[in-house]
Image (cartoon, rainbow, N blue to C red):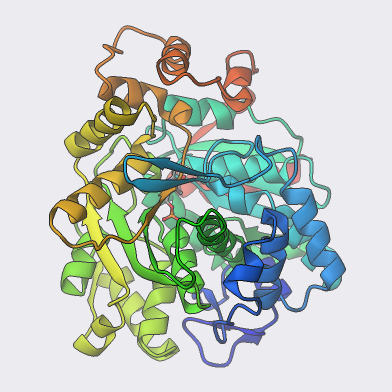
Length: 495
Ligand SMILES: *Cc1c(COP(=O)(O)O)cnc(C)c1O
């Protein structure tokens, strides 16, 4: 299996090289040359543990890793860091199956991939005889940053630097990041929104002179953002696992289809579901759920991707995104794996903030359904699910849940089981959740709200949150966008 770039024909590299590079030198993303089919039957797969399923899926994409290497990565990633042996449990509530992807170290779904990425990357470095220290540069809308920090902290041969929008993340998200330990970590608040941070990081990645300068000092960049195929591939696993769990529990007939709804920001999670479908998993519709930053919803309705609009800060900050990076991979596939076409559209996006796809490409989107939820709908959905079932969901999950409810009411979904990707623990967004539940949260501290949430939901406060109140603040630096490059330079010279 080789990987091509979405923007240039000539590029063809192995999986381990693609993981090390993160982003292609031409600004494109790496895509697999073909989508492999699952080798084992779904019945056979439904007898496997999460780790075993991970191996069956990942080996097809990362075929230059030996069995021993890949199993080493999987075993070390999906261990007691997760607070349940199922790793990704499926919870039934109110007519839908919530696939809980938040049982890792930082209680958001990013842990599913970022627990394994450091292992994949250091293994890839060894395989490719890389001498330089790997520098992970990451832009985050809140959850990636912490999950990447937790994954890479104190990993030998790596350093990690995280840029977050200083007013665009939840209090718990911020506290999680600024208290990060590990001598190889740096966390920087940026005066700007997530797209500014992401664009800034991409610029550094494409700055050849800067890369050479760092190479001379023994450093090479890589990315832990969801553009890295080392993030994407591990995310396919839990869709296969969820389907097989339904099969095992006889909630599905053999070969029966499901719908999948994913609260979407950078389009990584739902793209993994799309790959799962193309591998042969019987998914009928991939439902893309947006918050009020509904660029993707509009795109699926009209074929017009237009980021020229107001950026709205919502209660689901990890989805406050106007440039969904991973959509480029889908664009490439629906263009018939055409890099020239894709490069042309991406050029329009960077120059005009907009592109329009033609009818032929639009027909490639028939696997998708889209919807969005306003802030009021999101809050109402948290309240409704809690009042009807006692199950507490976070605002991101609520966006997806609300979209499913609306599509159902509109008759757009059949009676198939719906799997909703539940992407964060409600504890990570306790203030929004308690506000939605009408708890009168204004006067209360975050800690008090977390305790109230625990008692309302009959839940234990996750260790990841409990630790926060006592932890020392280690990262205090705030910068403006143009200072990013110099900040990287300084951090790398420091130690
Ligand atoms: C990152 C994130 C999302 C969006 O996922 P994408 O892969 O970027 O589409 C949704 N919810 C939560 C909680 C997240 O952390």
